[in-house]
Amino acid sequence: MHIGLVGLGKMGNNMRARLEKSGVEVTGYDTNPDVSDVASLAELVKALPTPRTVWVMVPAGKITDSVITDLEGLLEPGDLVIDGGNSKFTDDFRHAEQLAAKGIDYMDAGVSGGVWGQQNGYGLMVGGSTEQVERVMPVFDALRPEGPREEGFVHVGGVGAGHYAKMVHNGIEYALMQAYAEGYELLDTRKDIIKDVTGTFKAWQRGTVVRSWLLELLVRALEADPEFKNIEGYVQDSGEGRWTVEEGINNAVPLPTISASIFARFVSRQEDSPAMKAVAALRNQFGGHAVKAVD
Image 1 (cartoon, one colour):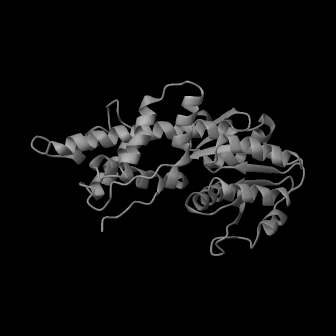
Image 2 (cartoon, rainbow, N blue to C red):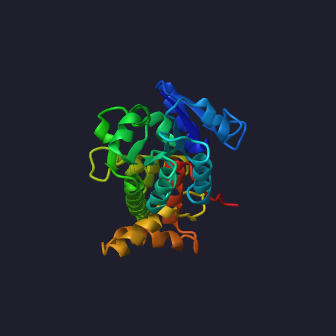
Image 3 (cartoon, one colour):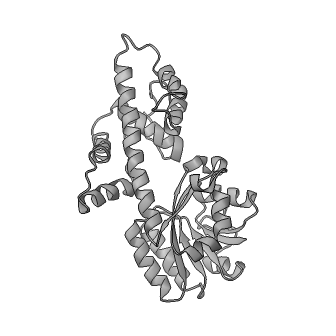
């Protein structure tokens, strides 16, 4: 199978490598000519066999809107666009309608795995028609982790469902990171009786009910910088966390834990707390998100 990939940043470039390793041919386009296979979107479209599949992996919002609009003018009926970025699910409805007017199909894919996805595989949450999902299943199989398909891939529903599921996933992620971070701060505060904070978290990695990949990443961050002396306690928040809380309000679903974790990030912008240092370190570990270094 041969697909086009628009956006070759941290995620896109790693995805290209994993796809090619699995035998999927990829023609990539990026505004950075050093990583791009072609000079323009038009050349990308010309390089693909019909019916074409183009995976868009660029920042959500105006940049994704611009790429979708450009592809609308270049693709043909029967071609398929997959938005694998972190777009809001309501944008999917608009993009699908926009492309459908030209006979172009559309799918959305929530992608989790961060900078570790190339090695470990990506968790995929897909929205779209069953026909289109089956058509590009070789791509999804190449990207997902090894093992049973249902443990790393789900066809959630129609257009928008994939990004909705990813939104909720990220809301849960906020709460989990906050819980680990607060536990870290409490342990670190009692230096009179707790002599090995890193070792405590490390011991929780096997056999305990709080074990997880996030916990493993926290241990990794602690081993590199036990007191987080090189990180400011400033934590950015992505759109998905806010959108999750908005959906809770709109549907009268109580989300006290997720809501509190987002407001805690706002606190991080007012003071340099140990817990927020831990959250910042975790985001850097799994997603390569930038941290503010201590001057």
